[in-house]
Length: 100
Length: 171
Image (cartoon, rainbow over all chains, first blue to last red; front, side, top):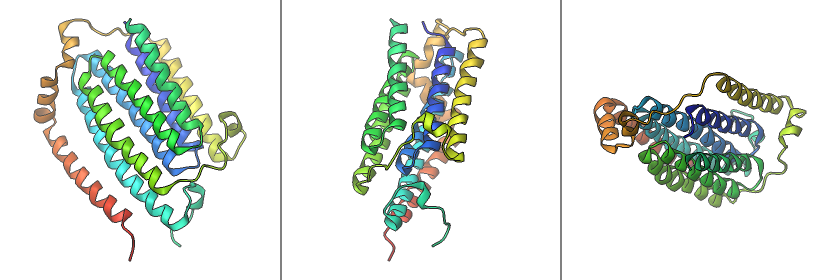
């Protein structure tokens, strides 16, 4: 058997990879993908701790996180499409003005 | 057996997540993220949570990632000009330096903190095993957390309307 700590360490590593992706990448779609990695790292924590405590609440929260991730992806990608129409690029550096 | 499966899935998840962040073509990024989600679903199975594993595959890998794939294909996104490696980012512009340092420090901190506390083993009794019972999840979802569940439907509705309004072509 594998102890809870290993799952939490794995979750922390995945979250760190996601954080690095948000800051390092120059492509809005990949930034959104990095956010998905972070959300999944948190999901893994919820499921592992839920299993540890013998409670199903971890899985229930995972379900809600997935729903929020779906909503976030839909709105985020709609924003990406709208931005791409204006500038023909997905680099975050191209969108520094609030109004043009 | 469990231990081997854990290390296998963990390695797949970490390597494919690193590649998602580390390479240029958004198409490959999405595909690799699906791989990563598959590995996480395997970990959920190891954690006695088949419901979470199935929703992970159906909702995440199935629905959300297809949405991403759809947008990547629709926009025909050009490849990024240059992706700085993690080491290059450390000496790059301030924003990226902060990001790389932040991620590095966070990762080290978590590993350090969790390796100092004693190992917590999962209970093998009936109570610990019962988290795989989907009937229990259902009753928790529709009885204890029914308000959150209903609020979620409003969230989805708002997100749907928002996505349609934002992506609409302006006249």
